[in-house]
Image 1 (tube, rainbow, N blue to C red):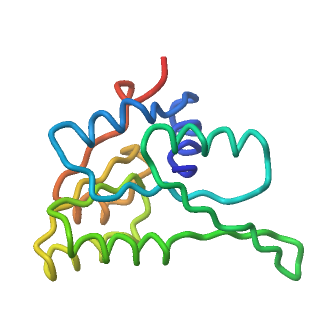
Image 2: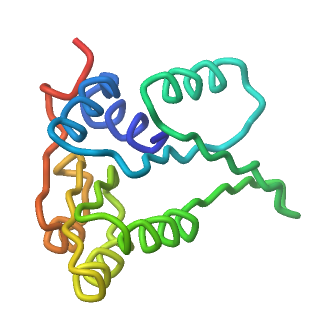
Length: 149
């Protein structure tokens, strides 16, 4: 969910409305699980953001920032997200992913083939990989209707 925050800031200079997103994806559905992936920087503002996500209904999963030998940092959730989506797909009819990362295209194709699970992807159109939009059963553009005004 942090990546969507930064993507919306980059594309629209505006904030993503997580409450509207939650209302859209849960309308008429039973939520089996809802994960928000974030990095744990120990920052108070980040902790407030994570608490907001919890209050909305997400289970917030945190990963610490890893310090490399060269001084750069990394906190990549791709494998964790893929494993959680794959496991959830065996127990639900639709997976909703908020991402623009084309690496998830093969995951969506695989869960459709293996479990007959549908997928919806929410992403900023100009920052979402074509492969991901193609693999999604339904692509929902993050535009003004999903931004804080």
